[in-house]
Length: 257
Image 1 (tube, rainbow, N blue to C red):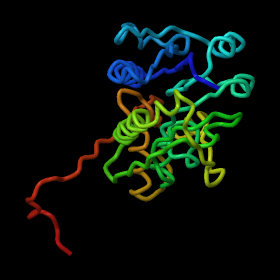
Image 2: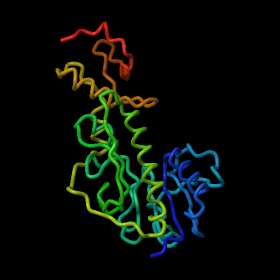
Image 3: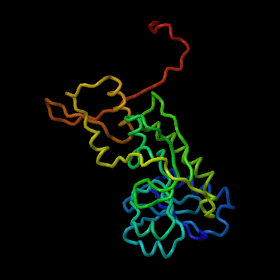
Image 4: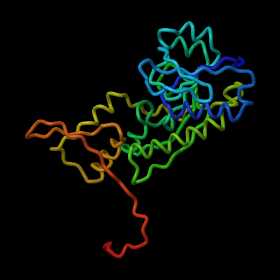
């Protein structure tokens, strides 16, 4: 099938701006094709047009038939909506995912990679009826550093996603890409799993390593993720952690073994 009409569904302002700039800078990508951008209803991040492209709200599940009729290709770029089975069965749907499939499929892969030491990266893959499960078009590993928080790891993953988009968008638009299956089923983390992590049980006994990993995994400003309940007042107390690699040459104050 020739992809003449393309729908990009995104809730990520940075990726939208990157897409728009790429379409303007590399005019041969379009080749007469039309690209429309939509977001989830209630998303207020897209107030301004970028290079003539605007983002309008669309609830996919309420407009499945229209999307199937009006578009040849649907791309999810950090879209918070789940594509209905009818859509993925009738149109080519592609996901730009901030994780190295099949590891930590689902919500916030960088959070769970910090916690379970599974590989981190970015993946572009076809969408099937399961979460982050379809055949892989391209992916790029991203190293996870000891001083990473969720935010710093996510920023590098998003840079990797941009590289993959730049390198593969023409093949995706022209339907000339190849795929390969994930090496295994991997694991999936849901929003429920993330929410279960957020409360820090102050009576829990764990190693410093696990404590640091949990706090850095839940540090993603400006969002408030980790918290504990003050046993005296009952107040909820928010927690973030700051990690900084020592880049100085003067280590004279460090204890030598």
